[in-house]
Amino acid sequence: MAVVAVVVALLTSTGGTGGTAEQASTGSSDQPGSFELLNGGSASFDTYRGKPLVVNFFASWCTPCLAELPGFERVRTDLDGQVGFVGLNLKDSVRAGRRVVEQTGITYDIGRDPNGTLFQSFGAVAMPTTVFLDADGKVIDVHSGELSAVALRERIDKVLLS
Image (cartoon, rainbow, N blue to C red; front, side, top):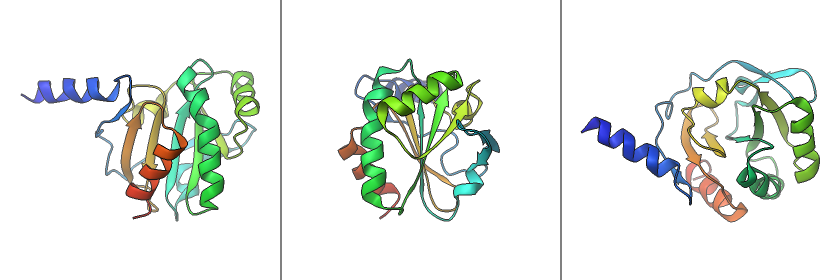
């Protein structure tokens, strides 16, 4: 029975319309350490504690990722600092990651996940994946699939700001 539940959760999370799958890491505040920033230096999830955080995994080879990024930037701007945003560029070169940033106009912090270690640590299974952390760094929700600006704002209002 447990195997069936896992298979259903995986199928739901990778469906064409996107969906939420409760990951093993949901509710955990034991997040991975530091990551390299695309423009140099490093950061960690602890850097962003004190306010809710949206972590979005994207890649240059992921068409839905590229489609959703401008909407993420609009929502970030509309929230005016109430929620932090971090993009994590998955399995791309620095050059490819920078090209995505220029192409989509995102201005929030962008980290690198060249081997997919952070992606796996959040229990992510499909691209794009967005992780919602509360102000204490606890994973509240993990969404696999593209999010429109409207859907992103609704989810932030529901799971982070309510």
